[in-house]
Length: 170
Image 1 (cartoon, rainbow, N blue to C red):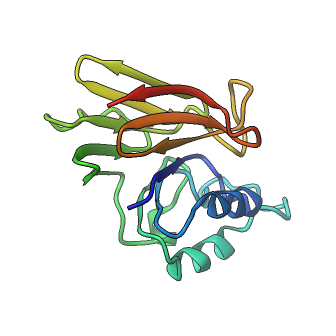
Image 2 (image 1 turned 60 degrees about the vertical axis):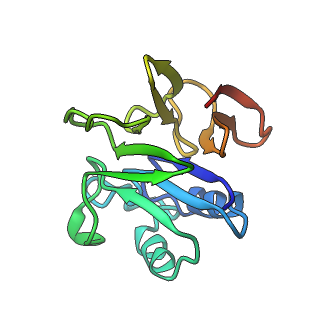
């Protein structure tokens, strides 16, 4: 298995969606922590706002992916998902939600991934790792970022420079 690419808060930007797809290699998986489509409040007058195109490509997407709705996503636009989920990769249990509401994460998870704030972060508290990949569309702390997880580490990567801004070893 390759790596996991983690993103959130694309808000219907087709340019951002193409950027995310270009980060993936054949064996990689994708994690989307909500606000992919932004069909509740979208920027409908912006030509880059193309949630329909993103949805059509995601239907035919060749990579395995994990996706949860965000507060700006309308579940009826892309049915079949939820606002939170738990899954296992690299022998780690990951809890995924957008972060706009605060349900308690299940017990015995190794990592919690959330978006919503458009601010990247990665920290270990006790035995749990918390990640927010930030945003490659509209970051609120100055850098266009995404997350990455490989078998032995997790990190926040700056888009363009591909510099690891923060990393944690497992």
